[in-house]
Length: 111
Length: 116
Image (cartoon, rainbow over all chains, first blue to last red):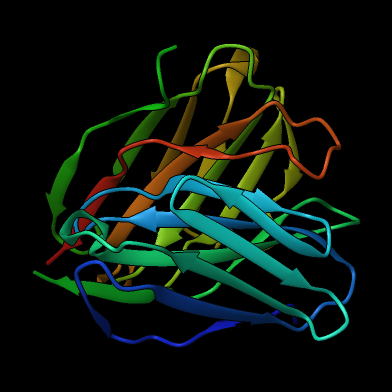
């Protein structure tokens, strides 16, 4: 069974700090990874995806992928109260292209 | 560009009743997905359509759940009869469905189902 594991949190960070979210996956065949943000009572919205080892930056967000360690992370720089949400990590299978989601990490940014 | 549309947004029914959800994907998206998200968990794929054909329904409880995507655009998901454990948010997502690593799924607003 393909598993995606995330720390459930809550992760509490002060405004302006860096929030670091971690995700591990069990299937070495996973080819790409997606981070979604989900506000309470809302649906997931895409933040970014990554499929090459290393870092990928988009604004205040940086995704990091280490395929050897089967590890993906998301850094949120200069955290704002509006970043308070649950962050879902998803891994895409290279054979059937299905997404497997983790349970999410809840982030709270303290003003 | 219009997003994924879903209706209704909320539904409350009693157990053993039936319910149907509707989804209209983003224009041009060939692949449509139905997910079930239980509170505190990540979305779980129920069924995936490519155009009007089923690609994967391995996680769909077929004794009570059914789905169709006539004409390869809109889709409906039905539960009959509903059980208490079906209380969840039902999310519809769509993507171009191209076999690319970057093919991205976009989610609709979801339908929150409460079974009493």
